[in-house]
Image (cartoon, rainbow, N blue to C red; front, side, top):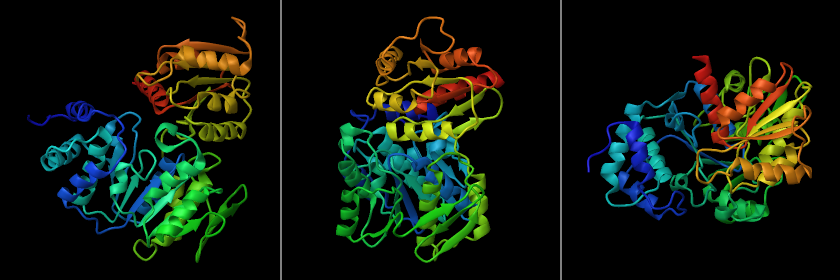
Length: 432
């Protein structure tokens, strides 16, 4: 069977390669990785955690690029284009580069069956190894211990936060999930946990395997006022730093983990104070409490579990007053939708809930029922103060919110990468 010629055709093939979309376990991936015979001469940084992974990766990349290093970054999922998942030197890889890496891997894997995520992760490893980089950053897809990214041995592994999500794969308590996340730690290597209340299971695992564990408030922390903030690590302080351009309450926790990682790597990847400042000031990550210019204010946030929803709620509270808040909300069925609603129901006046284009999405009607039970009543039709309406797509839900919102109101788009992506596509098509 000859290989696809376009990236789109390749991605269709990868969707059908393996019987299960998510197949936890590393045996097949390890087998192919051994056949690939790739080694990184540069530091490998792996970032796991329930929330904050993307922001942490983006800050690391931004600072290292400002310091003049050649950097590879692998993240998932993407918002608009698959190419966003693999970046070299701050730019998404081209279709041609991705196709070349896919072709190479296809020749190596033989008859080993790989899922979409496993195949693309190994292709990223191949692509970055060929690119001769100074640092590579890999974001864990799901969990840690059994995630395809974990075939790599990290020089520095960061777990950003541990909360309840993906319970069917990772367990239903923070202790069980913490153990899964800690699977990316390696003996003798730096292991950083940015969660202020780390699960005992994570700490025990790190100690058992002899990882060099850095804990927030024990080995590193931050302090700050409205204007600036300071980081202190084991042997290093960085003072009078500007706030990261990523907005939101948890970003100093994420930034502190980043600076701890850079401290651990200081002999291999030295980074100066100015590069840290510029890197944090210029970091850009779509869909993480992203406030778009213009009126009404539009906020894009991929928050899709209660922990992220609590942060979103806090971030909304820190904004200027808005007479009415509209929510464009769509979510996957396996998420704790009631938990997400509980954090936001006091802050949203008008809900525009939407279906999403995936079989495992919750329907807008199901979400509407959950909202009605959370509020304990159905808002009367035509009520200008409160409403719950259902839509077939994020674009339609957003268009409706836009048509009703006053210029001082705000529209928060959240619940899933797909919800945010649907609105971004709609806005792009309107602007062209």
